[in-house]
Image (cartoon, rainbow, N blue to C red; front, side):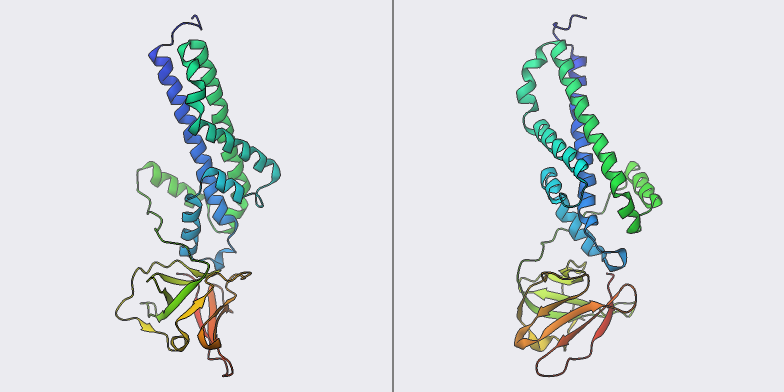
Amino acid sequence: MDRNEEPSEELIRELYARFGLAYYLSECLHRELCYILPMSRLPRKDLVTRPRVEERLAYAFSRTLGEVARQLEDILPDDLLAEIRRAVEQRNFLAHRFWFERAHLMSTVDGISTMIEELDDYSGLFERLDERATAWYDPKQRALGISDGMIEKCLKETIAGKPWDPLPSKRLPKRRERLVRVWELVLPDGSKPLVFETDDGALWQLCDAGLGWTHFEEVRPDWKEHPAVKPFLPAEIVPRPEGAKPWEYDFRLNKGAVLWVKPGSRENTFRWGVRTKPRPAQPHHTAPNKS
C-alpha cells in the first residue's frame, strides 16, 4: 500500500474508533480518581455516614480531571502524580486541540497511521494510570470495608444494564448558615435523629465534620422542634467548624449557648448536648451516627 495515497473509509473509521477508545479510557481514569479523592479523606468506616459519602462523591464528580488531580497532590505519591499531570495535559489536548492540530494528516494513509499511533499511546497511558491508581487505592478501599465481592456485584449489575441510583442534587454548606430550627423525629427503629433547618429551607443532619447531607427532603407534620435547642435559635453558625475532628465540634448558638458533638462510647454512635452560660449544661443525648 502506498502510504501517501488517499485513505479508505475503513481506515478513517478506524481512526475515529481509536480516538473514541482513547477518550473513553481518559474518562475511566477520571472516574477512578473521582472515587479516590473523597474516599481518601474520609475517617475510618465507623465514623462515616452514607449521605456524607454521597456528598463527597457528588463534589468529586462535579470537578474536571485537572481539578481532581490538583486536589490529590497531597495524597498521591509523587511519581504517580507526575504521570497523572501528564495525562491531564494529553486528555485536554484530545478534548480541545487534537482534531484542529492533526487534521492536515488525514489526507494520506501515512498521516492517519501516525495519528492512530499517537492515539494508541494516549490509550496506553490512561489505561496504565487507571490500573496504577486502582492498585494504590486498594488498601484504603479494603479499610473502608469495600470487598472484591461488592465490586464484582457492581460490575455485573453494570454489564447487565441495571441503572445506578443517581447521586443527590443538593448544595454544599455555605461558610456561614442561619440556623432557624432543629427538629427531632422518631424513626420506626426508635432512634431519634436531629434534622437541622436553615433559613432557605435546606435540611441537614450531623456528620463527621459538622452539618452534612440528609435523605430527608421536607419537614413532616409529626416532627417537633427540639426543646433543648429552640430557645437559642435562630443563630448564625459555622456549619463546618475549622479544625473539627471526626464527630467532635461545636456550633455557637444564640444567647451564648453552644451545641456540642462528641464521639459516643460505643461504635457508630455520637453524643451531643447544649452548653449554656451561666446555667449548667443540659443533659446530653446519644444517637447513632449512621443515617
